[in-house]
Image 1: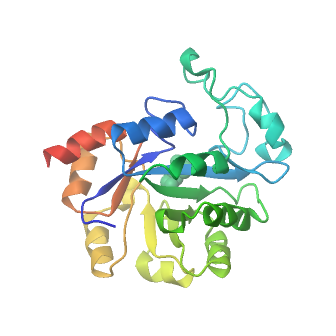
Image 2: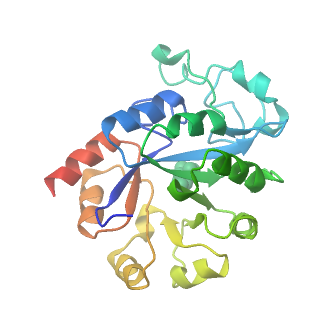
Image 3: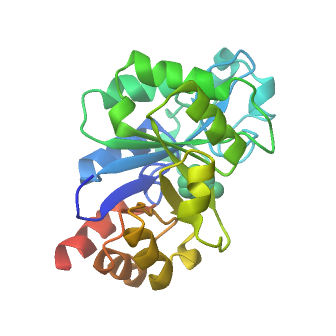
Length: 244
Ligand code: G3P
Ligand code: CA
């Protein structure tokens, strides 16, 4: 990846569009984001779908656990009206739907494997299979708070980039990341202090903090030349980056 700090749209352009919908992803691309961050879970019938919560309750007009609903059932739900009436057409995208569209774009893609609170056996294989099918291995980063899942990814594929997700201060996380076969660090914003950024750079380990929504934080991270930021507001981040 380039020297310039990349801008990843967190759940798509989720500040202005309903998160994890094709509208949010397309808006991020139109704004000029460098990449997308998306959350993946498995439907009852094993289809990788893009939704943040383990239930559909907050972001659709349906109810229940994603794991208990078939892909067909999930497709009947309105995934946009909770955000604004204008988005009643929005559905829960499948990962495949996103990848098909992404092939015509130049965006990077960070897929967060949401397996942990609800365990999705086989999610790593299902996701890697699709990424290979659409020939996107070189543009994808797989991340997870569940670091066992990252070990599984590494067992299944030797080179696809993986990133540890973490919220609290880990001591020398670049060394720890290697123990689970990961190449990069996706940490919460408060963890991304200058000392960590400098030491990670020395260890040649990319850092991509989340969720960076304040202009002052964006500016500081661009000036520190961290690898990327995850933001709900890619358009604003692009403006800040241009002003640097
Ligand atoms: O991948 C970074 C970030 O998305 C992790 O937290 O809760 O927004 O999925 P969350
Ligand atoms: Ca996420």
